[in-house]
Amino acid sequence: MLHAVIVHYDEIALKGKNRNVFEAQLIRNVKRALSGCGYRSVEKLPGRVLVYLRDDADVIEIQKRLQQVFGIAYFSLGMEGSQDLDALKENALRLVKAYREPYRTIKVNTKRSNKAYPILSPDVNAAVGAHLLKHIDAKVDLSNPDLTCHIEIVNRTAFLYLGRINGPGGLPVGVSGKVGTMLSGGIDSPVAAWRMMRRGCRTDFIHFYSYPYTDKSSLEKVIRLVELLTSYQFHSRLYLVPFADVQLQIVTKSPAKLRVILYRRMMVRIAEALAQQYGYDALVTGESLAQVASQTLQNIRVIESVATLPVLRPLIGYDKNEIIQQAERIHTFDVSTLPYDDCCSLFVPDNPATSAGIQETELGERELDIPTLVEQAIQQTEVREFSS
Image 1 (cartoon, helix red, strand yellow):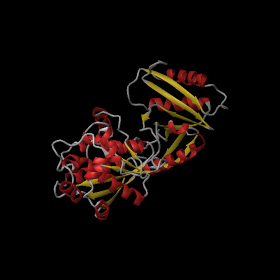
Image 2: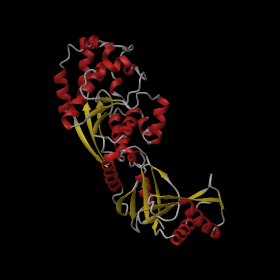
Image 3: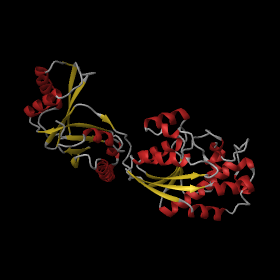
Image 4: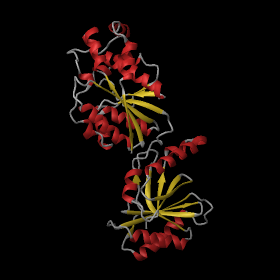
């Protein structure tokens, strides 16, 4: 019975003259997501995308993968048929009889993208609904039905489906440029990366680790997180940056209260060097305002002052509970909460500065050979590729 998937989008429809660019990227992403699942073709129709299925299509896997394609508002498994009213009646009946969940009330909802179709939507609803009631044990409920039979009249064909499955929304990955996300292994930064993907950015990941002064648990966690996030964008790159030597220089040559701020400034410098080398348009962090000492407004200003690229903080106004809820929804929370040694927790003073000034911080760095430290970190960085 399930011959097609009708994919709907919402935000893309508001894009005006360059809407076709967003639609084309969505179609490319749908094709890539469904590779190997048994689809026959993907076509653009007015306001929607249609996926034709082969008889051997893996419908369960198709549902799972489409739920991870950004740009999709919702999609439905259904069938294509003639616009002839008698054909609509019979196809609707076939579809409803194949439905396996219990229901007591039903509704028919028709939309006509093809305004030249001679029968008005309410009249289609009435005719198809009357036909259904003759053959099934159900009543009409136009306000809150247990089951809705959707009919879409598009071009010269009609699509019928029963349920809607929500997609992740947003914009297709690939329409908003490339960013480098500084991925710590905690709860926040994977959520920040996911939210940037949802805005159409392709993101690669930069992780700083302090082995052998910390164990390798952060590396293992980050790899698992990148694997999870790659399912939303098909391919990712992970830069593993050894940071222990930089930290030792800061610990031995700079004021203790500034250590965490100086760690972060060096991370930004190194991440930006990688971004410029590999062509990223911005850096992304999981910072949330005032969550920890380095994330006060004053310290954020001091840390960002070393950057020339934009530093994007999609979680800046979120509280911890909101971030946790998002992490649970995207299935990164369980991995993020596994125990690990964060490099920024190494050699942390008892009383870190919460409102450092730029001049004070620059004085605290005066003994550091910053260009050499950045260059050494870049040379020692390991690059790993991930594909879904």
